Image 1 (cartoon, rainbow, N blue to C red):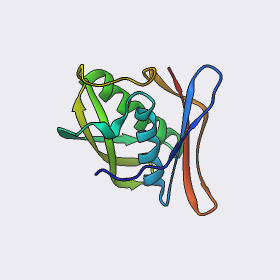
Image 2 (cartoon, rainbow, N blue to C red):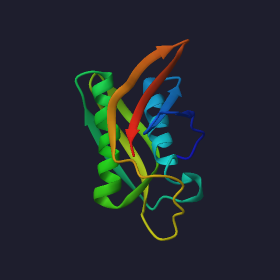
Image 3 (spheres, rainbow, N blue to C red):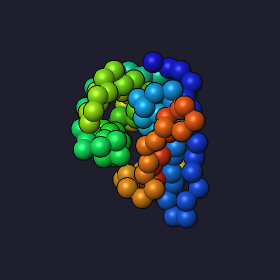
Amino acid sequence: MSREHKFEIIEHTADVGVAGTGETKAEAFENIAYGMFSIMAELGKHSPTDTITVEAEGDDDIDLLERFLSSLIVLFDGEGVLPLDFEISKMIEGCLTCSVAVRPIGEDIEWLGPSIKAVTYHHMDVARQEGRWRAQAIFDV
């Protein structure tokens, strides 16, 4: 699943944000997820040991994005794995299925920044701009 990811860090007063872009909405969602975990660790330094399927449902694109990213935080906190890459195989109105390449959290991971505690709805957006998709979220750290 390893490939180039397009995201940018968004400056925010107390928290941190990420915007992911892509040719498709699914790509934008994959890239924001990658950006979210890139805040915490250098993902490219690690190799996955397993793949976990994550499913999310939402009432609209913003709700779906929040539930998807929150599911990944639960995976990180609850399962003790570091998500390394993301591939959405199905994305239809209000639901998605994503294969997440993971590795166990261990002492060999060099943490770059704060842990993400939660996804906020503050400035969250999913939109098509200039022929590309952009997904944006602010995270509580």
